Amino acid sequence: MTDFLKQWGEAAYTTTGFFWMALWAFILGYIISSMIQIFVTEKRMQKAMGEKEGKSMLLGTFFGFISSSCSFAALAGTKSIFKKGASFSSSIAYLLASTNLVIELGIIISIFLGWQFVVGEYVGGILLILICWILIRMINPKKLIEKTRKNLESEEDDAMDGSKDWKKQIKKEESWARVAKKYKMEWQMVWKDVTVGFTIAGIVAAFVPDSFFQTLFINSGQGNTDFTFLEILEHIVVGPVAAFLTFIGSMGNIPLAALLFGKGVSFAGVMAFIFSDLVVFPVLRINAKYYGWKMSLFILFLLFTALIGTSLALHYSFDLLSILPDPSQVKIQDSEYFKIDYTFFLNIAFLAISGYMIYLGFYKKKDVEHSMSEMAPKSQLLETILKYAAFICYVWLAGGLIVKFIIQ
Image (cartoon, rainbow, N blue to C red; front, top):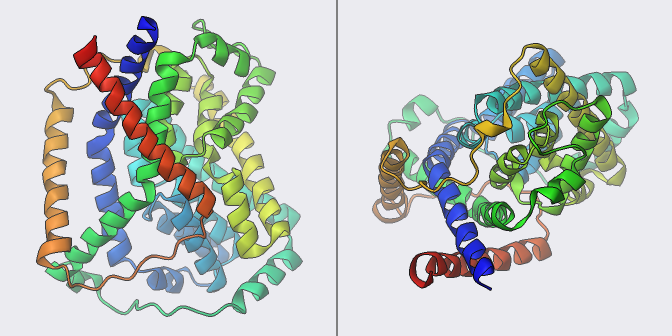
């Protein structure tokens, strides 16, 4: 019983330490994301993309890069630009960029995993897009694409105002109030995923023995960094399976990715785990609702094939350049999470900025109108489960911290 209480306290402390490490990055990332979404409208994106595939691919990637990291917002945005006339390839580029190339994700990865994984994330995001584009050109599912677009065009259209000049809007206090409201929405989209994801990472760090990971990921652990091709391939395939079992979104999954790497999982396996947020069942179901099951399964095939190719390419190219990261560089359990250092001062500064955003958007300019972004149709059951799981996590964390600092 004493051992359990000690591990419980350690798990809760690790989770809160993880979140404290990442807090300023979350705030910075979501403020940047909110600013871009207010000042760069979806209609302006659609108009800029046009019909030329080369230009459309580049712009789809760029607009994905500056969009929200929420998978559900990305799915809705992808459907919208495809429906408005963007090519299928550029729509997939937008989808992949908005979930793999976004600014806030890179910041979180840099905190937990280091610069090699940040490079891997951004280079890998581009490789995912290129591989999908090549596969689409090779397979050329013209009839499937035309049928899907025709079905979408029959839906009722939504009107968006893209005429406002962002240079003028950025100087207005009302525009920043809209940014504040969007910022709140960003947190509303991710708070459950982040809570559950960080709590799972703390629990796994404290309770799950290394032998479990060595069984799940062949030949991992014990300081081993020399893997055969088949072992790396197994890690890449198991990574998405692990992501499926803990579907909590890419932002919430990063501490768990750091944990996997610290336990000896290969670089390729960890990258595959991070890239897996679009190959899980809830995303498959949403795509089926939008485009039909045939197109949804085709998108799944594209993304999973690209994921395998990208993870392999990253691993062997990093190995060739002798820049594969060392698992020992990832310190999952640090007894000094809350020391007075740059993280402390950054958190205080960004909490103050966050407080001002709340004041501006919900008190000083509370009457400013702001339209809700289109979101993919989430599973109500999944959302309910995640909500109650998050509440249970808060009880778990409170109990663990009481055990660590008061009872023990």
